[in-house]
Length: 305
Image (cartoon, rainbow, N blue to C red; front, side, top):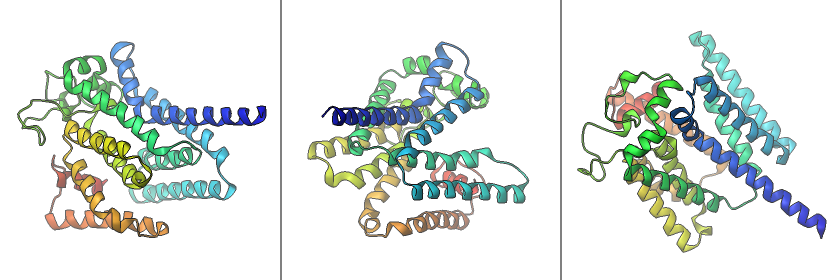
């Protein structure tokens, strides 16, 4: 009995550490921005160090729960990424660490997620409630959020952006948090685009798409109250962030979900290739050759990257 209780306690602590690592990985920019605005200047090396620690924690907590076959698959995938980096180097004669970092994120959190034995829907609903509460605070008191977090100072000090790029001198929010024109949602309200703990709206939009995917995957196992809450949170976050691309992507995911659920998961990589090819074709047909602050301009930026 004592051994069983000890094992249960170990599992609870292990799950708690995984949740803490996930929260840190998603929200470390907010923590660093708070430090930068109120304690000391945060430089790029600090952000890189925090990212490295998060990824290391993911592998440390996750690899011990994986079979040898899956571990081999993970390291095989990392080896493929390194090979692609080398090919890019031969083509461009430039080393792009960001390319490896962006790929490493996926592997790190797949490994972390494989070790989690708690309820994924409940975990992400809790996380989304936190995101929504921070966004609500930002919308209710944008000046207080700007002074407390000061995304402008953080992105200048820690991310290498130019202060001149922040066109709105009256706001400490991220450059795209305020727009010269009206909002797409709630026009005339003069509200900023909420960034929540991501401190910039585009990543907020990415999270909305991610949480929508979670709901589409697990809705059958959710209680009606949880499902209604999840849909309400998605709607609130879309309006709060004024996310055009996020809203369109979520609608597309809902429309395609019946088809995608019937697709063999082993062929899922073909969907990724199809999306990239479709985006490239769309850019080619529209003739866009430079970035613009439009939906098509962002698709061009994605393809060109």
